[in-house]
Length: 360
Image (spheres, rainbow, N blue to C red):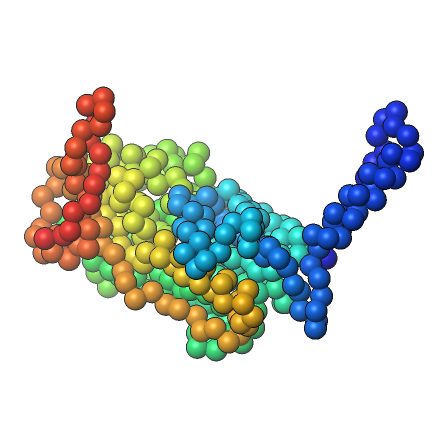
């Protein structure tokens, strides 16, 4: 149960008034606190902690949308305590501990580092992970079919998709291309796995890779100065909440330097990157609402199998291709699930808006 701080005496107030105020405050806290029935917490309004390394656009809204679709009403059947590290991955353990102190009913943890931080601070509060690449390998669950502990949710298998991202680049660059790979070492566990996979795939395709660190928005310009100095032919951007959040800065730099680039999230292509290939994290987040709903109704995480994505998207931005002076091969366009193109002019007539059309 959450501890409540003592009420400090008001300057110049009477002792009786302070005591009455303290009594009312304490009574309100008691009425709002979880009740115990048969050893289980019972709340009229469920408290959900949402832990994320960074503020990825649309993720919070998508989770709330999922809960609403399942019949939940915010501030009536649930409330959400959001905690974001704003790209500072080392703050995740502190934020996870804060959610535990708030005695939330369930913690939703976006991607690997957040899920690990939550798992390390509580063996009992249910944890629903979103988009963890290898939950068995990092020790979050015993197996996908039978998680066996207090963690379940969705996997992204993102590290297994690096090869597909390289294949998309291979169609538009020379065989021995020099590819700059932007990665965030602060996202230590997942990025290390991505790097290992990229090195293996790059060697098999004959590409030369140069890994360039980006830990914050401030490092984007420096990173691309390195990319240009080494005469890179293309850019790959690893899946990472921070890199996704600053995707528009990255795509702007890549386009200005006439470099084709590929990312792992649809949002990267929407922000102006040439291509993106990966799972739909928006859908994975919606599925997290399904897990939370089940848990709030009494299901145990140990009994809820981990879901893997079944749909992966290749998104191509034709506007960016034109800006780079690229003519994309028909075979690549045919593989695309979505092609972003310029459809109409905005109200001031200054710029094209991006819209979707089905791929050919």
